Image (cartoon, rainbow, N blue to C red; front, side, top):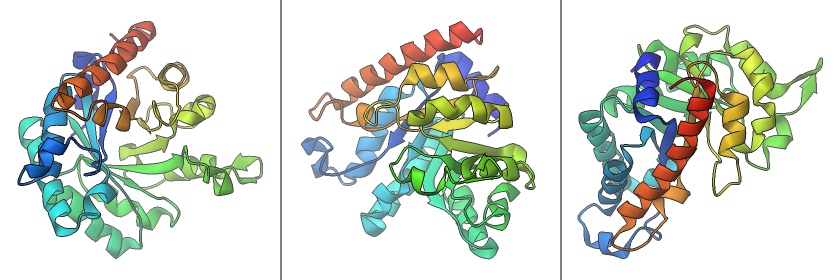
Length: 275
């Protein structure tokens, strides 16, 4: 996967939507629970119903790991299904991994080689040797946590030294790491006011934006402050799409929610002159 393919998908689908796969067996339609693999059946239906509008899919790894070995088997099926049937769609392992170099290398092998994901979310707290192993894989991306939407973000991310906030320093320093052209950044949608400052530091990088919809982030605010000449945004929506309808027509409702977001994205792309 490369950024040209991502941009081509954005132009083709007139969208920069990522669908987050946060699968909770307590919330999926009851009729799927009788399936041999209800997690995979649910994900497959969501993927097929929203693929017209989504340029990326982001399985949240914790939601699979919490079901033990069966959940991991479901994750393997989801990854294989995406890479086989939707090879031009960007895939994100939302795992937030980070550790010393040799351990980070094993994490990278697990998600890039064995599971064939295009990218993985990572924590940059331990510095370059915990992130660079993920950047050693050609055409694979590390998406590092920069400025997040959760309440606890204020505990550390805005700590300031020499008039530079910690989140800014993370972004600035990461630009110096090996293969940094394949770094993307997580910025929460509720932090849209900071996107102009972030864009001054990384004008060309893709930003993964969670937090639109249920978490209260504004899609239009994110687009107006964060979009660059090649869009540069991958905006995630999970619960709003996944659990729009708990009945037999859940996939139809998911498609409709994805279409609503895509229509707003289309307007913003037109406004920017990208399409």
